[in-house]
Length: 422
Image (cartoon, rainbow, N blue to C red; front, side, top):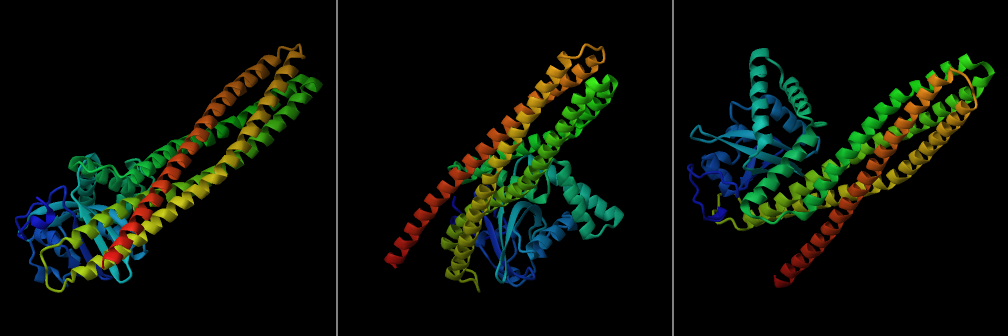
């Protein structure tokens, strides 16, 4: 049964294929909605229109969720969140809501949620609500607690969480409904996954070089026991310190650039998911058969088409920014590789110096050089992983841009055909 075939009644169920849509003003007062939103909520349209959106708010929802929701929207950022709503008859229904700012308000699109992440966040909400009720925390403090819950789940921040959530929700929905996979989302999700692995290796490298700093120090100490014969090791240790300091500087630059890249990838992926849903929303409104007082279908379709185009443009720009940021990574990797080679040369020089000294003290130096050898092997392998990972990210972004260009070309042709037909 299609959305448009369903009667408008409080008994209407919220199915996986359904999309609930509403548009509010800046205060959150409902201006328009699709018929399914009205039927699932159970409220008559005359009560919903010009009512604050909290008319469907459930008392089990933590206030911190809505504090975060409105804070991001008022900053001009889109947001996605799992929300428990209350229907007119007192029953509840869960949604994954994606809200985006409009020029004069906000548009919200809702899917029926499912999956492990949804089940996990429901439990987090229960704990958050209990904290609000027992500790009398403010909504802002509650929002901060929610973000900490999100980090405990392994996410960098709330934006990373909501991006993962919307990607999963769309993927599970498409699979259950037998819809074709969104190729652009798939490429961007792979790019995000590949970058997360690169990021792990960058952090491991930073930790490894922090521990490595003791090796040149130990080499200097051991060299002092060799009198004049140890002078060469003092020089070698100094060179080690210089080279590793330069590598640490490059790794820090890589981390900084990587943080910016990750933000761009997250935004691009989230906006691409939003664009897919908004495209479906336009089609939902275009085929609405239940007219509600005060809702002009053509006007709503026009507003939603414009919003869809804006977010498609933002998604494309996010992809281009990501591609541009990756261009600088190869030069950083090349510089790190060159410095690695320099350390390898110093290691060989240390081996030669040790072989020329007949002294029991060289056993300690040999152990240091052996440890250095293992360090270089491990870090060389890790550098290869990072280079390969960054190349995969670049490939997936390139593929996503190509798909985006084809989609936009098809959309332009479709729009042009509509114009000629009219």
